[in-house]
Image 1 (cartoon, rainbow, N blue to C red):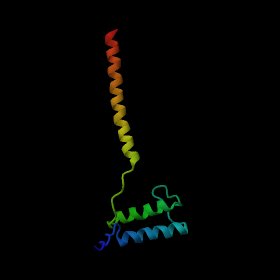
Image 2: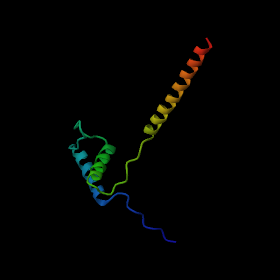
Image 3: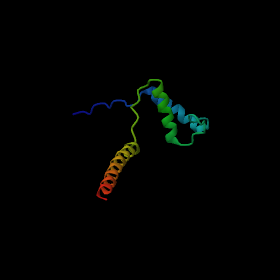
Image 4: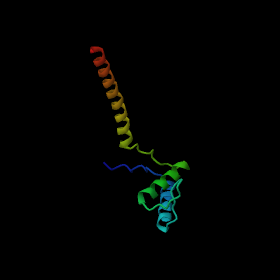
Amino acid sequence: MAKKAAKRRYSKGAGRKVERAMRKRKSGKLRSGRSGRKVKSRKQAIAIGLSEARREGKKVPKKRTSNSKKRSSKKRSSKKRSSKKTSKAKASKKRRR
């Protein structure tokens, strides 16, 4: 059986945006968002290109959610649980006295 042709994840327009961002980075003219600092990282240049494409409505996959966000929410929920346990324990100790 022959393999199916792979579907494009990113549109050609999105690819062009990333290429443009990379060229700007090489020439030292690519600046980041609010701060306007010079972009030196290759990864940051790609991210800027993709976000510009996303803003224009090009076909770009959704942003991945990082594991750190998931972990922090788990920590918060576990902290809430543990604080409830300790407050219950303190209340029961007071009753014993």
